[in-house]
Image (cartoon, rainbow, N blue to C red; front, side, top):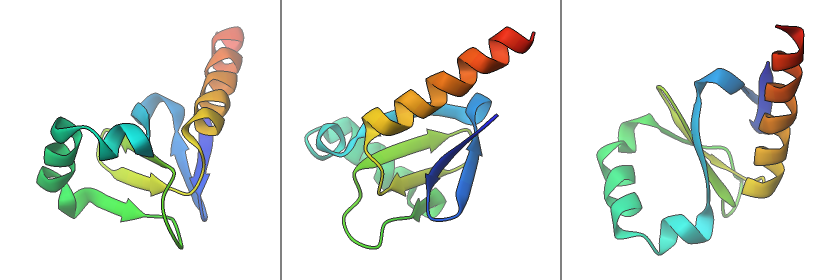
Length: 85
C-alpha cells in the first residue's frame, strides 16, 4: 500500500525505512551528517518548514506532515496488508 507524505507524493509502505520528527533531526549530529551525505536524494515537499523526515530505500522526503500522522498512516496500511496475506 501507499502513504501520502505531502504534496502529490505517495510512497510504498514497504519502502519506508524511517519516519523521524523534525526536532530529532535538528538535535542529532548523526542525522545532520546523514542528511548532508544524502543531500542529492532529498526532496523538500514543504512550502515552508518541514515537520518530519521520511527516509525510503532510495529517497529522503522533508514532509509538511507530522511524524505521528505519517506513522499512523503507515501502520494502518501495514496492518491492512497483513490481513490480506
